[in-house]
Image (cartoon, rainbow, N blue to C red; front, side, top):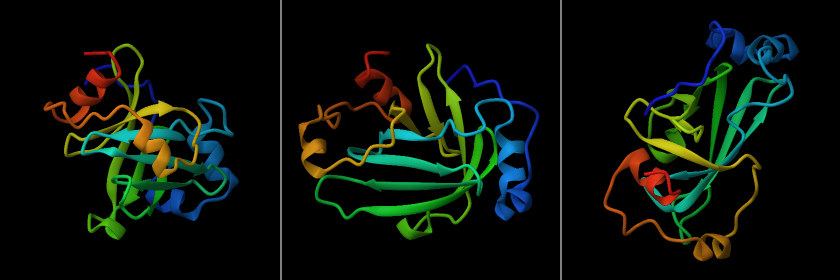
Length: 163
């Protein structure tokens, strides 16, 4: 993974981001359009290729919400998060049995492909900047990536024609 998105200097810490409010939002997003978060969009997770992740943001509160499914027959889940800087957040994966404060970083890969990357090396590739609600039927129509034996971001890049 190369080509980190150019982020401004830091941002508010977790405590101030957790407090939310318009001041937090302006501080976090002052380097870009203050009404939008780069995290927002429809994503694919290479660990759950038949599923989806939809990220929405409440910029005024400094929060993220992830709604997703691991596969067409799996239950929908919801994760919450706190935006800690323009390109960083902490996500609560405890509803899925994971850590409560997992670091997530928005990056651009070489060629400009946006991803959300996690410390374990997994990365969700943004397929669309629109946070659309996807039905099981929509997932079933998508080209399956499960035959690809590569792991992580390499699998997503391969499915998108980038490697």
